[in-house]
Image (tube, rainbow, N blue to C red; front, side, top):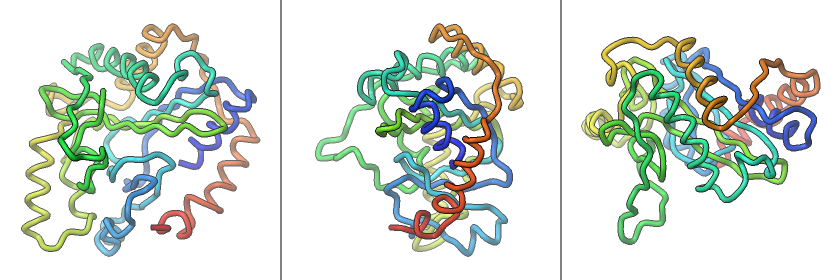
Length: 256
């Protein structure tokens, strides 16, 4: 998360090009949304699992990052692929995500989600993959890709996750529920509402295979010239400072 923010700041100032970053997590980590209550996390269960926890700079609900490909897109607000409001840029980037999945053989789609009467758009469920947002990627009605966007003065950051394989219900083991019956209910509901690549294709797609599809899709769909790059010394220094001052500090992670 610190690296994503460091890239956002540097690309927003024009010090580095707009950046597509593809990565994975080690060890597994629970990320909670910018405005999500920290009390949603069962800290004892999390620590017993050997997993970590971080608060994202973007909104949404909890995600367990493991056995997945995570992507982030960072750039200035006048970057053509990021201009407009959240929904407009979200739809534009979703076209590239859909193309990547189609290259993998996944029959995915991104549709507007009807809002329930009286809803303010803020789901109460603590798990991100229980509730698709507008133009998020689904397969046969089940959520496949979870994404979130932050628009700041430095620029625009959108990041998201593509679950490749494994048990989607693992996340319920590290969230707080009133009792085990409720935990089981949420796990069953999650399986009914979300999916991963292994379930859809009945095979394992490796991180490397998914990453190649992402690179090709972003290049072709958004008419990009992609050049492999590494973090600059300034980005590394900024990420280390953000880690110490923010993302690894309770004043950020446990702030609400």
